[in-house]
Amino acid sequence: MNHQGGLAYRDTSIADLARAGETLFAEGDPCRRTIDIRSGVVRAVNHSCEGHRQIMAFFFPGDVIGLPLSNEHRYTAEAATSLLYSRHPVLPFGNASVQTISDPRGLLLHVWQEEKRFMTRGLILGRVGMLARMSAFLISVIPALHRSVGLFDLPMSQNDIASYLGTSPETVCRTLRQLREMQVIAMPRRGRLAIISSQALELLAEGVEPSAV
Amino acid sequence: MNHQGGLAYRDTSIADLARAGETLFAEGDPCRRTIDIRSGVVRAVNHSCEGHRQIMAFFFPGDVIGLPLSNEHRYTAEAATSLLYSRHPVLPFGNASVQTISDPRGLLLHVWQEEKRFMTRGLILGRVGMLARMSAFLISVIPALHRSVGLFDLPMSQNDIASYLGTSPETVCRTLRQLREMQVIAMPRRGRLAIISSQALELLAEGVEPSAV
DNA sequence: CGACTATTTGAAGGGACTCAAGGCGTGTGG
DNA sequence: CCACACGCCTTGAGTCCCTTCAAATAGTCG
Image (cartoon, rainbow over all chains, first blue to last red; front, side, top):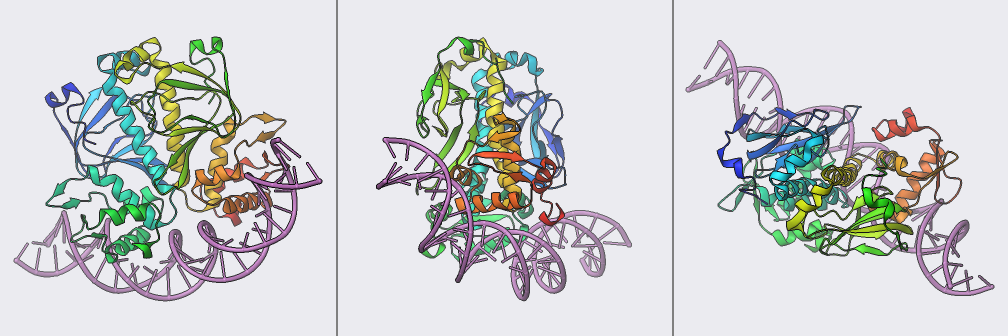
């Protein structure tokens, strides 16, 4: 999941800092530069005209976002946590070939990584029942989470998780509690997560009845 | 939505035929060729290990699928209707640059088109309530549908729509009936669709209360 | 015409949403 | 250092929507 070293110039560029909530680029902005996440989490946000707000994906260290697939950005990127990142200039879309010639494999790899994140949300939201959705969500983010002694750091707020899962913060809280009571996960502290039974988590994500776990 | 003429060789290649239900390529297969849809609908399918099946996207004439973003196909492609398409050979992933050099803009356009389809499903499934989801789904597919005298041809079965929307065929049927009773759409025949009030459809997709429409 | 699939409808049950309110954690300012 | 304020998380209660199971009808293909 971490494509360290995917771009040759990564190590030489200076990192920028963004605070939680800061907007990196907005939907409709012209694609001027890609953003290479060093540490922290970025959320891709879509605003509907009625004011509803959806989080379409979370991006993690190693991901490169803002890729010039078209002239304009296709979503708004916000820092979900405090963030360390670097920016790399991009040629206008008409000259995209120049962008790809320098490292076509790198570009396509990053495009694929981005697309995977969107596909994953679809697969998660397509499941029936919040338990299955939450379990699938946890499984999908765990590989990208920072671990310390078997305890994961769940960096996004339950509000963000709710927007991602298409539900309410209350339901997120209740579902996590349910997983705790089933001894599938543990959350010793705010934002800390331990997986007690990853097998049970996978069964739940597949839609197996909770009573059978 | 229809990128006619996106690839120069389209007009000169001979079209293949596939029957409804036929598999064009399977998840995990090596990416040997891209598929250029001429007529009909393709569904991108994901099978979970427990046998559950999700439709991640529908693809329409003008879409090019099976793009070599990685070595292997990322989903299974099946003909949702009888299909006319053409295949174009693709160099192995390591040589992807050669693929892009001939027409980098074309490749990126098609990649973007594919990614948009996956993003769209996420945005649809992220809405609350089946009415909103169904309305958003109809809005998203209408531009790709074949029209005859204001009557659209809805080519996918309600089973497929259910798999796409993450619900059951019964709920799909009931939701369509509800839209009919609200005079928002009409379905004079199986697979035929008329939009009576596209404005109401958009309001419903935005989550406005049905009683307010 | 007959078999099969797709669509439609009914009824019952449970799960998720909403509204409302209370507890916890964090950070800020006096 | 403490008090306060604010946002985040947690919990409760009621309602409605969606799911599931079951069965009938319509449409399609041989």
